[in-house]
Length: 483
Ligand SMILES: [Zn+2]
Image (cartoon, helix red, strand yellow):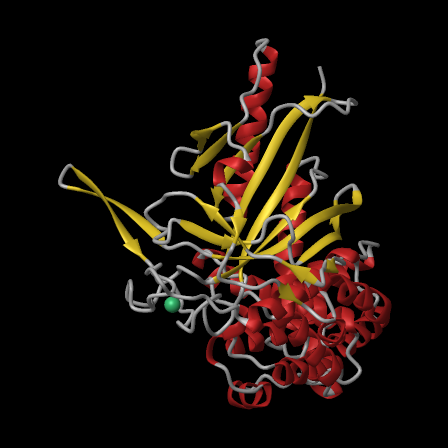
């Protein structure tokens, strides 16, 4: 039997505001700040306190909603979602339930099979929970609670169950991350947990419309965890179906260390959370003028940017998507292309994705921390374009620039790397190469034309890579003909 997987994704994205969702506590880097240092009575859930909505968080949520083609609802409501867990001091989370901030959007993503449109059901505002760290020490188990994250604004973005493969799920997640970063509402720093996933998964016989019981996998905290979790679950559900069983509707956790899912809660419905309107907050009203202003402030999004690169620079779909996916990389590319005189955009793209990319992979550094500026790379590529240095030398210069900074001009001068087009010098090197290798010259004369390339390599090596390759080729051809 052929199977088809039906996946819906929920993405929890922290909004990078200065302060928390309902109080004035600062939002801090959870990996840096001392635990429980940015907590006040509001986010610690003390009795009698009153929450106040963070306007910036609402605006960020609107930006995301608009970028995903959603309707921004004029009036949305905050509700209490009640449950007991040690990372939730209030015993409830303020969220939006029946009336979210944004609804009915669409995100188009690229996959190996072409474009795929994934409907967005809703995007709603809520507050994050605290963080638990489970410790095992001297045979004892205990948990540490850090409430710094309590009350950090979260936007939960929920798709319709339109995703049909792991590849589509990954494309959706990475595309969404690119949009969040382009909008400046989330750093996209997965290691700091600023984007987390939950996946609803069910498997059915291919070609049917049946919706079987679905499971929800929680705490998928990286792209890799999401992929592995979904793959594990598809496999598990198919095995149950093939043995004649029925998949139970339940909430699962993802065990990253053991690579498997485990039961967290059995069948869970919304009424288990006893949602009711948050009595301490009035309805959230967003007037149309505000929506217009936010819409007008949206930056160019990665997909539009990639299409522009294809049209303006003739880049491939893959290269333009790679460059446009990250605003920092895209801006670096555009600045370099603008500053590089007479150098095609394709060349600039190739050097950034090739040489610079390889350096980042090798060193594990971030693009943000590069020692080279766009103007410096542009200067180097311009020098290569006008023949001052050849490509091999330019690569050597670039690696110095990446490691130590500085300018191409300084490195060329210091290391004597100027390319020479001096015809007398090149002619003498060619003559020397031919004279020193009589048997190779003989075989060339006997019709083995590939030897010309070998001679070319010899001359370039003798010149320390600094000879202008075009001049060498011409002079070599001339002398070989004469010989
Ligand atoms: Zn607070």
